[in-house]
Length: 340
Length: 118
Image 1 (cartoon, rainbow over the protein chains, first blue to last red):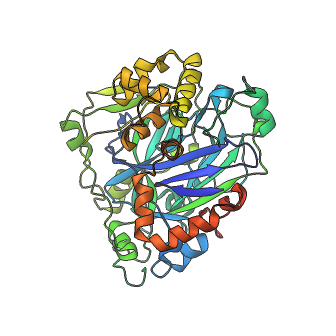
Image 2: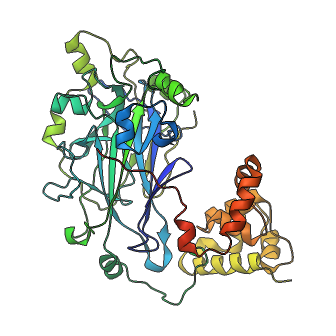
Image 3: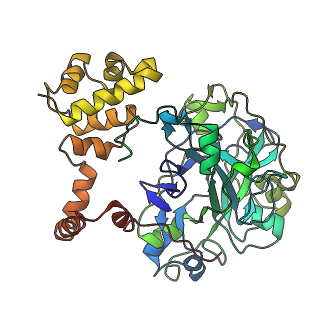
């Protein structure tokens, strides 16, 4: 079952385990400079306002109705990162594990391969949540990602357009597989079987700034340090017969106003403005987890700055490099927020 | 006088304390911003349950559902009140009709995110 609760996606698998529940949230953040340097992780400025596309069927494109799912607004000057969280289960001394595949424009963000609904471990095309707490971009090299940033679909910058030459899909795709109940109970046996836990009990009318599509595509932005961890479990532990998936459409602020009649959140600060306030950046310490290698396909993509130069344009007017002074090292379950 | 709310949060806190020493009365009280003596009185039923804000903080600290703790305290969260206030007739009728349904039948009413054809 998949619900939208308080702006977060909640994937539940009660048929597998009563506590098999994963929450996925999309965080707004600044665009790190696309200057060839490697930056630490940027903060969160809150979550994107997700809405059901079905609630706006009179004003959305027909394609979105076919896809179903959710939608959110995104400024070209902002970026997103994805958070995965779930409840700690005291009786099992663990959180319930999930395998999660993420794609943008149906391009897998870990491998760069075309979207499919199967899991693969050669190469690993998923991440393991909530052990992996966040995903900030495309896994281009071991320990290195290119930030998820917004560019109008059709402008040639998105991962989809760079790797397929087409601009048909856009948005973000997520599919979640739970660990098999038998594997979970074997790996994390219940410690106190007799304990009790009562807690258990427009498109036509909207102005569009892009040529033909209201969608924002997700494109590879600046480089940052982030490890995507290898699956620490056996591949056979994942229940491939059970999954939930979601298509999340992204659009620009003008179209959003036209579709919903509501204002999107305010524009986030630039990296320079953030840095001038002396606010922290983040570095995640993943204890003993091993990172995956990174994708050669994704690494072949050109950054927006590079591609913009080739096109003879300036898609990133505010792309000044910054010198990062304050990096906070954080580990599991710590929060990365920027109080701007 | 023993209360369901007080008994429950005490038992939950002590259960957590077996695994994590930071769940002493004093430390939990500090984290939610009340005096330890006040929390102790709540747990023993000598004080009524605290405000919605403190119950929500307690729920977060004890890894509990805030709506469940509020219900035990005989309260309804402000956001739920607001939802009912916007369409009072509709929601009062709905809640009355749902009250005797089994959980699985109520869960069928949960709104799922629709998946389409990609």
